[in-house]
Each structure stands twice: as structure tokens, then as C-alpha cells.
Image (cartoon, rainbow, N blue to C red; front, side, top):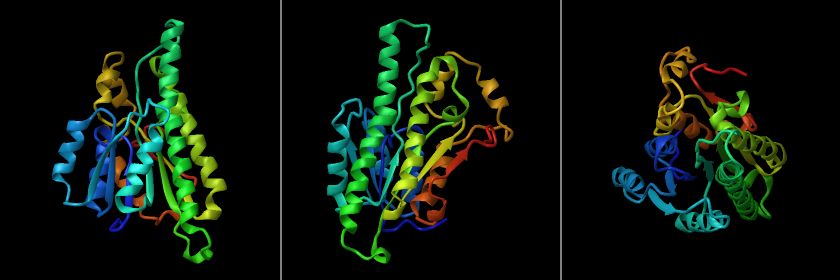
Length: 261
């Protein structure tokens, strides 16, 4: 897999779960990483403590707040003067069925869309504007462009269980955004990919276990094992390298053949 030396990568939700796995792999491959976290300060600091000196920056932002992506982007950009790759990983996955009351459903759907779809859209907007400004006036051969990797999910394609309809819907939104970006920003050398994790063993599985039998989930995986955050991280690192340029617009499944589409 390609070396990521001199690549500056912003990873949202990088302190825990899949995000932490992505950050660890990117650091191993030589990238400079801006690790965004919301509430996982201790976890973020633990990752930073093991990172090579000068290769990681921690940035806190509460993506429930509408203007948080703006401050996050400015902070990320200020570190090295540029961001080459944006990885939209931050997400929430709270339980709420459609049989609950109006207030509960309104909050669950609103929060999921805010964090899982709207905040990433703002970060994409800011990244694209910066990359276009950076390349303004340059010949096509000299344009750097940029890479966007949006972390989607299997339920965005096959539907989610009743307590998580809103989560699948929010991930379907970010997937549709990815397709549009790939089609209409390619002329600016901006590529976009959706990475689709299957059943990855993270802290969020504890919430899943409250409602469903984990053995049923395992039975869906032909490899007979859950994926790890680093499994996702290795795919993200490859996309971040720029070597998958001609695959822009692709969705890459990381699910052990648990869902093929």
C-alpha cells in the first residue's frame, strides 16, 4: 500500500471505533493527521501520545452545533496550511423506533441528519472551495485537487433494523452526496469515495446488543468474524494515496461478503 508521507488528512470522529482505526493506519502509512473528536478527549489524547512527534493534531468540535464544521475546518487548515484528504467518519447511532412519540422521533432523525449528513456536507463544501482556490490559475496538469472519503454503512443500501431506520437514512444521504461530488467535481481533480463498513466490532456494538442477538449478526458474515476498525483504515489509506483516482464515485465494501450489491 502506498506511502502517505506529506499527505495531510482530516479525520472526523477519529478518537474511537472505526475512526480511531483509520487514524492509526494513516499514521502508520506516514500521513499527517488532524484527529477531530467530539466527546472522546481522553481517547484522542491516548492516540496522540503514541503518534510520531509532530504528525498529529487534535481538534475538538461538537458537530451537533450547526456552525461547528466551519471552525473545525479553519483549525484543521491552520495546522499545515492545507488539507489534502477529508475523511468524514463522525457519526452517531442512537436507538429510536418509529413507534416512539413525536418528540423522540423528531430528535433522533434530526440529530442523525445533523451529524451524519449535514456536517459532512459542510466540510465537503469547505474542502472543495479551498482546493479550487488553491488550484486557481494553474494549468490542469499542475492542479492538486483533493480526495474525499465518506464513511457510509451497509444499512444505507439494504435498510436498517427498526431501532435504527434514521441511521440508515442518514448514511444513504451521505452516499448520495458522494456520488454527486464524484460526478461534478472531477473536472477539478477532486475525487470522492464511499466506504461501506459491514459489521465492525466497535463500542457501538454495545448499543446493538441491547436490542439484538450478536450471534445473528455473525451468522450473516461468510468470513465468520467481525471486521476491525483497521480493516476499514487500510481501505481509507489506499484511497487517500490518490492511487484510486480513476475509481472516483465508487463504493468500497468492507464487510466480509456479508452484503454484496
